[in-house]
Length: 216
Image 1 (tube, one colour):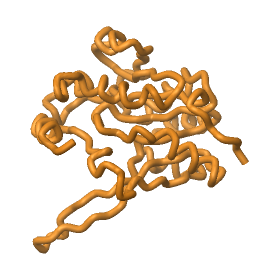
Image 2: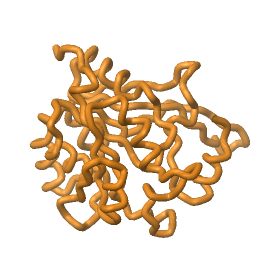
Image 3: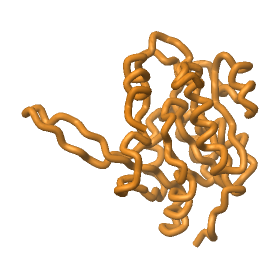
């Protein structure tokens, strides 16, 4: 059984290495949300929860470095997806645990690290993954809400680095397919006081504006 995990045991990793194709190819993490770049919002919310924060980015590295964090690109240049960022984080991490978050969720929970850490210890797991309510149409004029996993919000042991190297070298790209190989604790963020937009991510400029206009 793992002992309690403290903030100083965790390094945060902001995933900002994508192409931003659904946003016209712009660097998503540098788009302004209420006047501040999305990735900087993420950094400001994640930073107090962990020992330090790294950024995984593949362009505009100096802009991300200006946030005061170390910035690391993918090892390869083929934009292989979030798992490439996971691997960068695991290889650069100097703490026992790595917490990954995307750059486009500016309302991420302020207790994300704490709740994932508690679940990882409680279930003696290798990975703790967030889950959150999502509402979708049932095709018959009404909506239904389901709890869905949020695979890019993961707290993991750095000992998983070798497993991820093997998985990606074999051509693996899907986060769920890799995490399924390890004991994973699923952590729902659906309590009455939880922000329903905490995991709302931004893929288009219209979604960015809509989230800006949403109630705090």
